[in-house]
Image 1 (cartoon, rainbow, N blue to C red):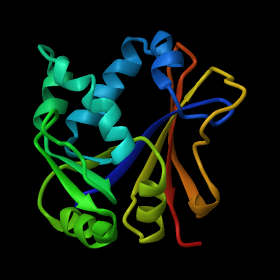
Image 2: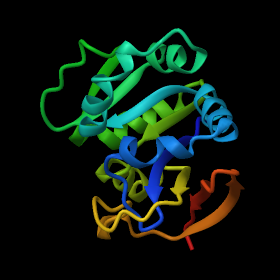
Image 3: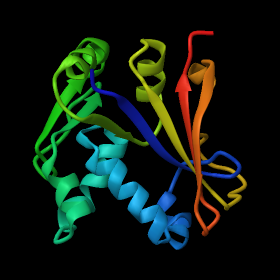
Image 4: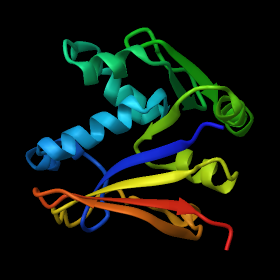
Length: 182
């Protein structure tokens, strides 16, 4: 069975919005290698509508390197309760919000590599509640933003266990947690 991994950038004070404004200066060579290996281990991206629409503005214009070429080539599934224009960044399929658990459960049972989620929100909360989320990879950056969109919400509540921690010279720490049933 495939693993579903939510990979999210967060500040030390738990904010996740606008990572392009605070994360780039900390992405040293070792962190980039880790991100590349994590991404190459996945053959599917699962995204919420807001994350997809934001990334669809940038990723189609990137390419010419193995990381971007892989991201642009793999199937993307966009969870949305309304219409989404997927013409700009494909291959992409929209999953209606009400079909999330059944569709993603089916994807997880298919043969293949990991399914990677970029971002965090209702999508990760719903998958964790349904027992479909296997790992949180939280990229903790040495930045205090002082306010913004939080990494977790009240609906995120679930027990987790620390599975791994990787520290980079830049001060970034990737914490891997797995939901438990305790």
